[in-house]
Amino acid sequence: MITQKVCNSVIYRVTDKGVQFLVLKKAKYHNGVKWIESHWTIPKTLKQELQSDEACALKQIKKETGLDVKFRGVVGEGRPYTFFWNNQKIRRENHFLLFEAPPNTTPVLSPDNADYY
Image (tube, rainbow, N blue to C red; front, side, top):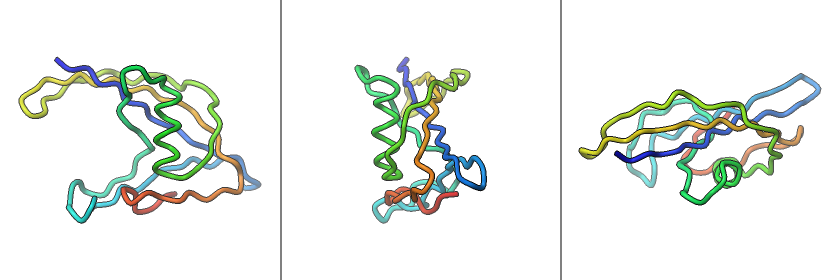
């Protein structure tokens, strides 16, 4: 069985309107090929073996949103689950981290993302 660790990034900013959280709408197409149905999610990525959770998440946040954020802490861990992919059993562990974005920033989305809220 393969074990995968996923870093999930909860990003917020404080504005004069209050606290706002970032969610991304994934694009239906990647490099011109339909790959998933469009859905809303938070930035996330598979963690590399020798990479810290924070470094993993920061790299993905920059790639997906262009934002420079500050690490604020660990939110928690999701319940591990297993699934099969290409006839292999995979165990996935989710780690959730909290980041703060500056109040007056606007995400610059990667092609994998269609919108944000």
